[in-house]
Image (tube, rainbow, N blue to C red; front, side, top):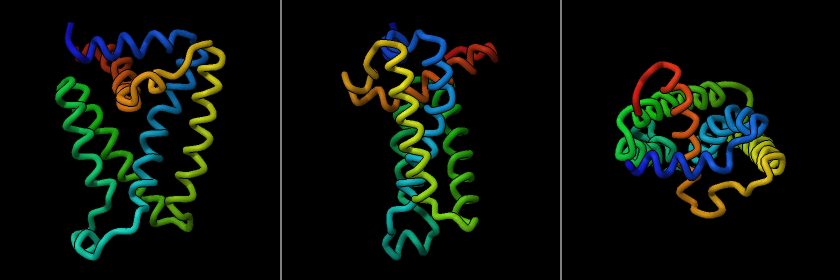
Length: 153
């Protein structure tokens, strides 16, 4: 069995309740987005400012390498989520709101929802067993969409 299938199967064991799955369908991509937003907000050295690069741009690179090593289609899907997330963060930055504040509030709300979902599920979040599952969550979310589009992962 491929590594991606092993990880998704294990992740899926604590995500079987429909309510928990629904919460994760919203919270997982939102947490990815707001985490990038928080990383985006870390002050940058002048060199990064000069090239208009944030820490979020840099953080995306190893994450995408991880996803592409698991699966090409999941890597491509995560590239799409990353681009959309970075664009959304850029829009927040151009608004009257502080990126870090918006993202921090959403981060807390989404994690509360995640834990509510796991309380209903009656199972602990997978990342408590292995921190790698923090990255598997978005892949698991994408697999549902890839399957609907008949794209093998």
